[in-house]
Image (cartoon, rainbow, N blue to C red):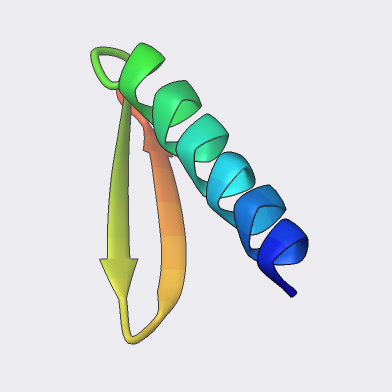
Length: 41
């Protein structure tokens, strides 16, 4: 379970990194647990 938790944490960090990289071009809004991505180009 510890190994699985580390994998989940790594995945979350990777997703956060991707969101941060595209922060200037894409706005991500989380509402009621659902993620909506709007392209601001």
